[in-house]
Length: 159
Image (cartoon, rainbow, N blue to C red; front, side, top):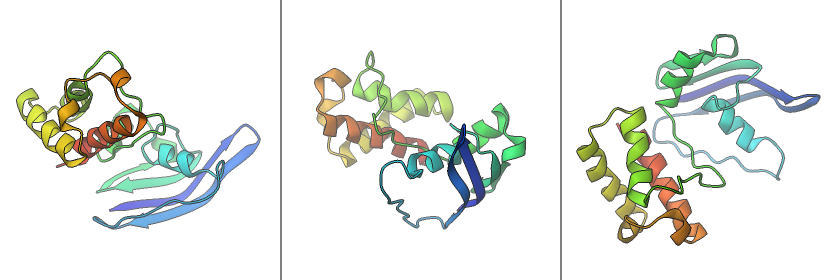
């Protein structure tokens, strides 16, 4: 369950989010649509506290953080409930596809490396790039990089 209430965010004089509310139940798919520059990515960055909102609250699966109590501990607790596929994919260029999918699971979720590797192969297979596990990002097309990034995010939100 995700509950976003009264989120405000501005960059200097430019208000990007002005009192945004959003709810999504577990398993529900929600799509944010709109023209470029209307705050879709900013809202997602606020939800996982990559950008701290100026006002409002975010609750994911029982972990609630308000704009006034954002700190490293709260941000980490909330981020453990989220994953995000960035527009630029943000794969580590010096790591293979497999390493890119394993590393966040081991570092953030504290998953045993062997188990993380098994899960990584499953997710890579589900997005159709399992045969690229030993490749580096520079050897992949943009679409392949995006699928690896999806596998990495999918991997993080698994319970």
